[in-house]
Length: 398
Ligand code: FEO
Image 1 (cartoon, helix red, strand yellow):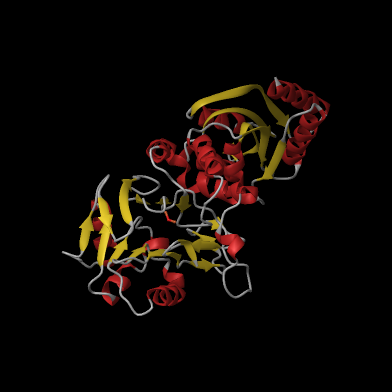
Image 2 (cartoon, rainbow, N blue to C red):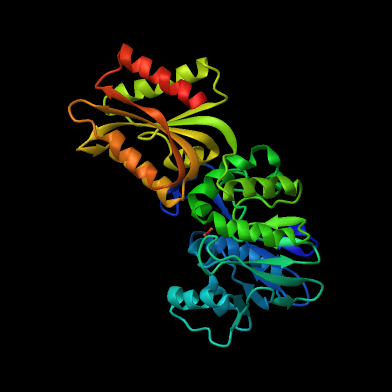
């Protein structure tokens, strides 16, 4: 499967993984992408997760057709891509690994092997001639590990983007043999949903580094973006570059209100859903809700970043906030949540404390405006609660 002349996709799908990185639901699986540049010198672009070694080796050997690779380009050392570095280097003793200095240190840490003399260290702007193709290396530290680099193949205009522009979801249709061509190539329709969930949960903390990368990318004639997860992007590039610019600059993507709630006995959820109803009645552009105890946490994080306004609604628990809400706010904090309006709804039956704790947590984050008034529910939803929620809805829509 070629993504450009003599550049083949040799990646694999993982449709039986339960949690990616041990924490993210991937109902449609995930792909570990790997590519092969077939030229006078043959370069393999990254390996794959150990879960799929056998299938990847089959793809590799088929693409090599009896030849041996000259280079293994190691863009990223996270095990979903680098698990087979040692295996490949041992299988092909003349293959040279090409990576950053930091990646070379990680090779030793992960594999306890010193490939001395077989690792070619590259830095910003270095090039590697393969024949008709030339790779230029672009440092991309903290997208999203420190050793990450990308490479730009100048003949075809391909940016090998490591985890950048990655997306959850396998490329193959489940239960069918062979790859469906339509899944290898990104389409604007439907790409953002799982790419956004991937971005904010995995890369989100490092927006400044993505901004630096986008500035470098602006100076390149990119025709194709080849990420390490998800489909290859080879048309409508401006759409993808623009949306990455929005995400990485922490600007809201859409006007809307996301209500994240949790509830012990149904009273706080009743209030949260009542607020959603009032907002819709009053003409809110978009209202989205998530029950944090039951819905996907990664999707809640994604929606918090997607919209310009967030409401958190939680009961008091053990003198603080119900744990699942605490966890949600912690996720936002470590992903550098910022530049949003946040409203607070608390519940308490004898000593309400959740609102104060949630306010303190958001006040630690950058450019957060707390929308007043905070609504405090006394155990159950009453006429006063509805009146307070209506006042809050009006403030959110102002
Ligand atoms: Fe897909 Fe950061 O590994």
